Image (cartoon, rainbow, N blue to C red; front, side, top):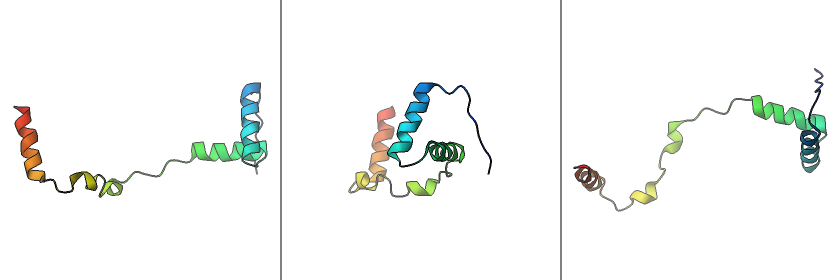
Length: 76
């Protein structure tokens, strides 16, 4: 396993890191590892499929064709 040394870390930043490590019941080294892993892991890809059904309740009992026609009429 590799070793990482950090030089010239601002005292205020170290104190915040130390406090967070204590809150999360970790050592400072463990907390640095967790934070670096989270920062470096790419976020999961977004999927348009997760939008399926979003806003469904807003359109309950609304005639979609009539709504579109009203919107188009408002553009004139």
